[in-house]
Amino acid sequence: MTDCKTVIRNADVAEDMQQNAIEWVLEKYNIQKVQLRNKQEEQINLPLITLPALSERSSEAVAALRQQPIDEQRRHLGFAMVRIAKENILLLFTVAGVVAGIILGISLRDPEVKWNKRHLSYLRFPGDVFVQMLKMLILPLIMSSIITSLASVDSNTAGKLGMISLIYYFMTTMMAVILGIVLVVMIQPGKWMTTNIEEIVGEVNKAPYKTPCRALFPENLVEATFRSHKVCMKFLNGSQSVNPDYVLKMSPEARTVFTELPEKVTSDGMNILGLVMFSVALGITISWIGEEGAALKAFFKSLEAVSMKLISLVIWYSPVGITFLIAAQIVGMKDPGKELQRLMGYMITVLIGLFIHGFVMLPILMITLARRNPVKYVYGMAQALLTALATSSSSATLPLSIKCVEENNGVDSRVARFPRVSKEMRHSLSYYLQYTKVM
Image (tube, rainbow, N blue to C red; front, top):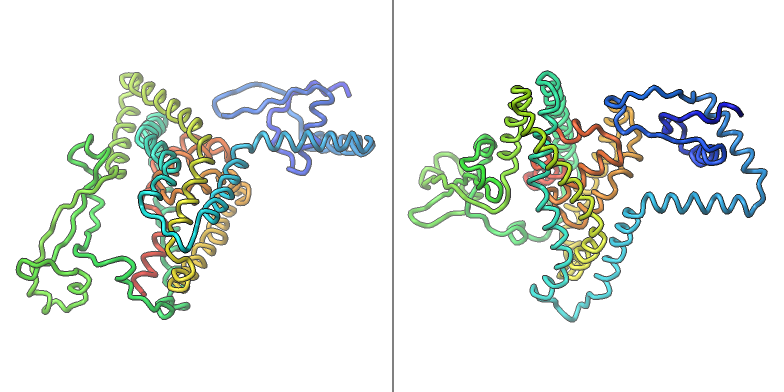
């Protein structure tokens, strides 16, 4: 074979079942494998191996491998398993952390001994450190990634991406809302509950107003990094506050005896919408002014690279953090059997809705629109999904999601870091709202 010194430019054109055979051919004939991370920016004139030639060589490799002794075949199989383990070592550690957390939580749980909040905080401490480290990286990552991505594309491209994103968000959210209403009407989980919903969620004295426009334009940008504001409607009967749920169920005539008082409420936590809006405006402006904003663009690009490197270091601590987070959740349960019985209908309805949406609707959209294998894509997001399972925080999972999308699933960084409404776009929240309202 005189042409075996050829360089492969794109090795992922072969099927997964042929991958080991291809690697064997590359190793045997000393072929150098080159993968281009960004095919649009790096233009290298390299000869290509076509699919027929690649299939012919892989078939030859399989035939040659079958002629090897059993010990030689086992050796090649062992090398392949070691290579796969090295490539997925972090994912394996994370799965082991989930299993270890479940085992630790069950072993520490004692129905006769109740853990107080102080002892639970000690058990959660390693996990809380992990969550806080992830949240610490949210602000620099979000701002730098959005500014860099928008500063690197022209306004027409940014407008098209924004329009496609909005259409997709609206379409998937409406699908979630419609499916949630259909399921809750069919299953009727409220009839299964023997407990008043107020005993679970508590009594509320203020009805929040959704004011996204107000959140888009924070008064103080520095304050928006650690504090958010919302407007709540407070109902007063004289000087006494009244539960808004009772008032809102009344007719407009009966409601006139109460005084409606808008009240601005401050809560801890970043104003994500405000920061995203400022980052979008700054990134577009840098793109407009051209060379004058090159220094600022380079600064945020460096900040983005540093943030991603820090995330790469932090995620190696994730198996330890996930272990103690899951263990603390299991130990802190009051009576799992009683809680399960009380919320059985609600839980079944939510799980059915999430299963249909996550395993039927979204994969169909991915196959139809992106022409990608949903199973492989979900496998690439496994690290972020397991972290979300343990932390129950979309904010803490955001840095990991960006990293998994870019490195594991090969999405262009300008698309992966384009402004998203990840804080507001929650399909599971759509199901929760529909179920709670109908119940």
